[in-house]
Image 1 (cartoon, protein in one colour):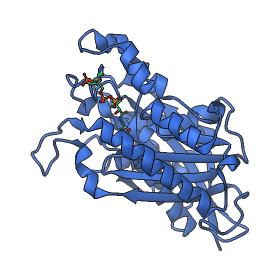
Image 2 (cartoon, protein in one colour):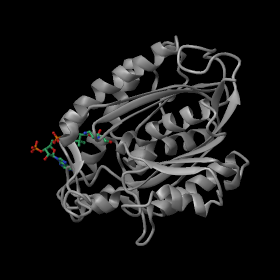
Image 3 (tube, protein in one colour):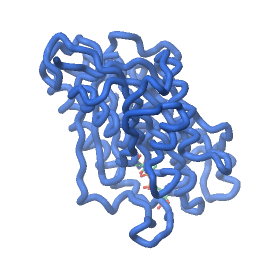
Image 4 (cartoon, helix red, strand yellow):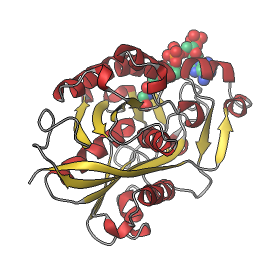
Length: 331
Ligand code: UT7
């Protein structure tokens, strides 16, 4: 029997504390005007002292489970995308597993930085399609505030903390599973497309690590080069996803992109010929939350009724590694 991964629900969580651009500008040589004009960011949420990535992940997971009318015990696969785990080991996913009452199955972390959610979605989708799991929680959760150099205006204004989660369930499909086969009108994840290019490892990285120097380290980025690559690579992977399913840009109901920079998102929307109303933009109120940004945007656009059952949703992201990817989901 062939299976497809259907979305049962999603949820998001942002920490209570909001830090505006003006607040950052009190201690750093920057301004609200510069940040808004160059990035579209107006504020970010920052985790409280002692509030960990796992705490954000649990809250998002519980909201996604409620939306799916399920409990932790109904889940047999938990894939958590994060670049800011609670501990070097074990996987933060296992802590989340225990706290949501998931008593069996498997839980593990996936690390692809800002592309993490797309990677986690692809991993979970493949487990469900091959029958190795039945119901999956896919989570993106980050506390990037802990790895920022708060004296570096080129990076610290760009990021925030948060978590988003999606519940997937394997359902028998009428056609064949996999991109390009079966009906693209049938619900579920149509396909995912992942890429990495380790040759660009050094343009976006953290200058610490357990093996490197025993420190947590700070995020370092060549912003202009990351921007250039993002525009180029995201365009290519979106074309790849559409072609694999025999679809065209006009078929897309919603573009739900990684929220790194409004100018990158606008350029992708223009390239696809999508009006701004079809592009879910959340960067203004929570900045770049890395692996959490796509599921946070999905949670917001489903909760407010924009994304409806049967609609075609395109997700995409690009991040450190460099990594990039896209997925098409019939909601
Ligand atoms: O999610 C992972 C993927 N990450 C991304 O996709 C991020 C991609 N990159 C970007 O979004 C943009 O490159 C940035 C927002 C990081 C920077 O924007 P930019 O238009 O590329 O600016 P820039 O780096 O070329 O800097 C222009 C000027 C510089 O000053 P000078 O040399 O022209 O005098 C910077 O020092 O802006 C200055 N600058 C700032 N000024 C005020 C850099 N950061 C700031 C700041 N406030 N926060």
